[in-house]
Length: 420
Image 1 (tube, rainbow, N blue to C red):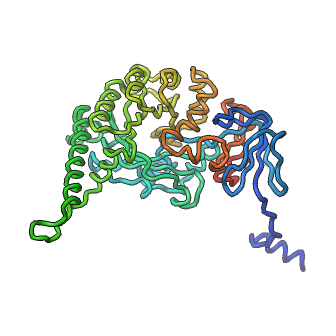
Image 2: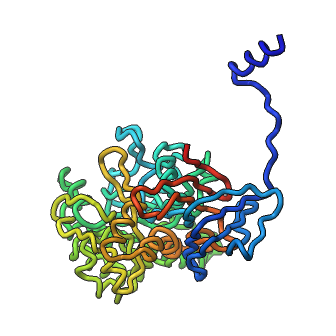
Image 3: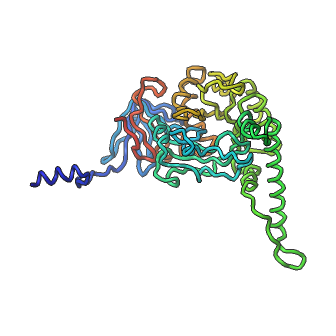
């Protein structure tokens, strides 16, 4: 009877098991720990993790693993990978209208949109990225609107938006090129040309400047001559967001692929004193000197992006390397594809950039510490250093070798994926 009861409870999935001993922390041992920090690559390395943070990093000879720590072993260990620009979480795996929330193309100025209001923390694509070592993404609106909306940074592991969120807003996305003009030009609306797109963006920033002046005047003198309190200016969420960009409270991620669009973006950034990050930049290598002179980092397009039309006709596998050689800070992004699974994998994109001139160290940095620095979250992620979030990827071999497998992924010190 006792055996029957146990079998029955097992079948029902409610068998009560003896509690599993909880480890005090985690020790990760690896033949090589690529810290992407001043410590470089540590041979026969150990990373101690406690309470979700990295506690110590060093060699096995220097670090003693405390009693009660769970030990994980791997050939190579890297920081969690960071995707500088994605639409995952607002655009989903099924490629149907129900999970396409990245383009609110009802008007060219959508500055007030917040990706946190459309982010789905249970989106299957997040788990797909996680299995390839991506622990952090900056995601946001798509490319259809000249002013697309506010981006945010999330961990790829978390059951709720708040538990996944790292930073919001992280940037304001602005788009030049074909997408905005084709979106509205097909409806006989403005913008229908590159000139029109630039004009829409300029006008929006000018109106935000005027709005800010009104607010400042109101704050200086809230009462009229008779001592009665004046009515404040009507709130405008689009203008309030643009004010943050004008005051450099948030950076502007400006998507442009063609050389002429890149130069237009640089002019707009100078005119309004924007904290600019160039995005895409398929022809960035053709104007690397101007980009470097402007001091703008670049979220480089996926290395293996398809050539679609004139915008990406001059795409080069060497673009990331050429920009980096010019001294421009770069990060490699996944971007967006209209076909399932709708996202590139930055691990593979960085590998191709590596063999086309970028090299191992720069390629790894372009998907770890470099995006963290550009996005100003390097105090938490991007490298394996004491005090940072314990986001780690455990590999069976060289991270950029195509036969290598991701064996485990840790986010905030928890093992969120293990190779079956």
